Image 1 (cartoon, rainbow over the protein chains, first blue to last red):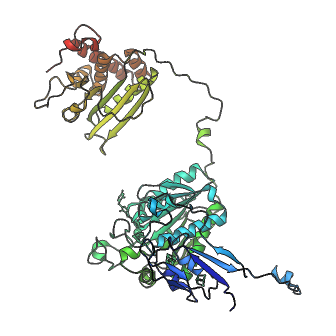
Image 2: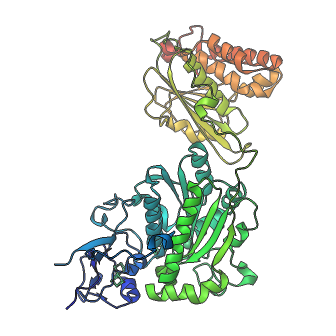
Image 3: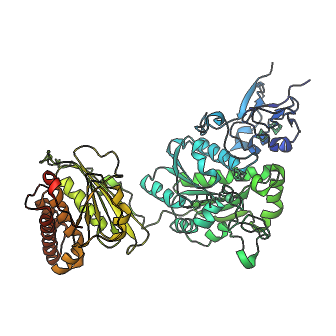
Length: 90
Length: 489
Ligand SMILES: Cc1ncc(C[n+]2csc(CCOP(=O)(O)OP(=O)(O)O)c2C)c(N)n1
Ligand code: SF4
Ligand code: SF4
Ligand code: SF4
Ligand SMILES: [Mg+2]
């Protein structure tokens, strides 16, 4: 299976289980854990599949550090320079 | 194996650990799904990206976000309820290089602080205000705010807000947009991803404008309060979209870049203004001349208008002239006259630890209520000087000695009751011998411009001294004769 373009980690102790990230994630790759964390809430968790690394969950989450979003580093492939591409970006 | 890089993570503008309740230092104090956290994140991100963390100062309100200083690793000032724009004004004007952010709720900004925000905006203060409008007083448990919607329930609009009784929701962005000075005003909402990203842009834009030296910027953010609204975090987002947007339309209400005003006051520092940047003549304080004199604590109490505070000030200044460590702590009610006033004065050979005196050596009671109220506080070996020719009936027994000094009548006899406090000063000088009469006269000469009044003041001091001397007996050292003294009764 191809590696997902993104991934997230969630600090289950900082997460307050509001579920906003779960709702907002476009590919629906987050869920609330059935178990409770020490503070009595069901924290969010990455299902491990299909994250695009879009960052939406980070911005809807009210907690400063509950979510960290990663994106796959695409190895640089030597691209043939496009004709006139330099001028086009000016 | 494929490698990942972090693209979104906790902003370095937040502390790693929050200095709050020990077991909760890794999370904020906000309810799950509260909008305040999102606003915090957007502000932190913009500050980090603009590279202004070192010179950013956050002025926090009273409301749920009162503890924002737990989180932001930057300058923090916590203002009294509604006063953030006034505090931010001072911070910005005294540190023009700083980036000053006011953070306020709708109760804070649109109720108790309406005057402050209007005038700061009208003056075009070069500050940025983030106005978190959740249509309710969150912190205090859900009272109606000026921004509460028509029909919305709150503890103080239990039948829903009715225009006939509580008026209409106040639109602060529109209201401020009627003013000339503001350069940027926008209303945004935290109702969905798209709008959160618009909020992110607005926050950044406002801070960029301040960085570039533009004037007043104001971002109103419609923000969910799931707890008080009694909704799930998801329902609260929907409620913003369905109910709040109709009353508080989103958009930019002002976007103007002002050229610097031609009449702008040149910036200077307080040090320069006072001429303290030039080499100073070294002023050495006179050494304590009478080191054998005891320390003295005095409480002076009476009505406002009796010169209570001024008497304390004069006493403290006399102490300074004599090389003492002094403190003067005034306390007065809202009324300038006829309310009660008192002050504490310490004259000491050592640094004054606390200006509050629990048991004064001397109480100067300028009226009867003060005598009743404070006589029991006086030290057992202490003294009370009472402004009357006789003690009132029903005074509870107290260990301190009481001398009656009819200061009001004496001053009146000299031509003005204004000198009543000076009669008391004379009595105090005679009683304690802590400070010389000459110092009092020199100080008054420097302070009182009116020659006639100065003369009366000096006579009043002497009359007060004479009055007490009569009661103390022929010897002048009160303390040496404690046993034989004949206080009035
Ligand atoms: C001078 C003063 N008056 C009243 C209060 C009580 N008080 C504390 S917070 C608050 C309202 C806060 O509402 P808001 O500004 O909307 O903030 P929120 O909690 O909703 O974010 C009030 C009235 C106070 N602390 N100080
Ligand atoms: S980064 Fe985007 S895709 Fe990945 S979990 Fe967050 S919201 Fe979902
Ligand atoms: S949005 Fe944040 S706090 Fe809420 S469930 Fe997701 S990770 Fe937890
Ligand atoms: S009461 Fe409302 S505004 Fe206050 S922390 Fe809770 S959700 Fe946020
Ligand atoms: Mg509020």
